[in-house]
Image (cartoon, rainbow, N blue to C red; front, side):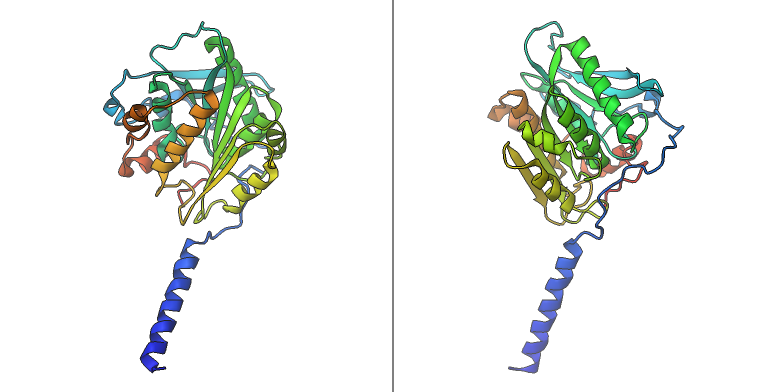
Length: 320
């Protein structure tokens, strides 16, 4: 065997190892929850901080009537009373007095709060869901006290009560990013109005409710990047295992992608839209899939800028 051949083999072997190592997460972290009782006086955020984030930049590219977006301040009563801000996307033909099992999506960000989600997919997805022929209301909800799950849980329940009383919604699909997995699975394990739970790059701390979610056979979707340097992708694997095998569950790992799924945000958004509509019993035809769900409403350069503007990067979250 020639010296040149041996050196070439060694070079290729080292290159493969380097590529593999680059794809591995540089963390075994599993929690972004706050560890102190001190509350952040900078919260709750004010709606005025989120000016210009009612619709995604390219919303007019959807050939449908633009959904109404209502800025909300929802009252929460749990001791440190206050209001939690959010944006409700309402289908233009929505009848709040209609009877039946209406479904809405509630979209939750991470340990710093925020209203646009990882790679701004909430900002885009909420308008898409509300623009469908059988539109689904979608609420982009902030927190009063981010990273403190017991308060965030009350924020979510107060939002559910508000939508039930004012919009005749009786079923909810909860979506959470990062820390947001904690309130998603806590509420999902306690409240029978929850009919679907999905997370992007979830933590495992304070997510014990996923076992009850599994026992109730509530559909589950978990998305995570294998290159996540903020929360280990093993978090989603553990959640998948903790759910059990009684109900419908799916774990999708994106090879080498980061905490905000910046490389695969379009695919993540499409999967989440499909999951939410399926939980809501809404069928999407090929025309809607092409002209609504698969449309790009926030381009690559804007999606991180919008996260900063929307407060999604003010806490421990990162796009890495």
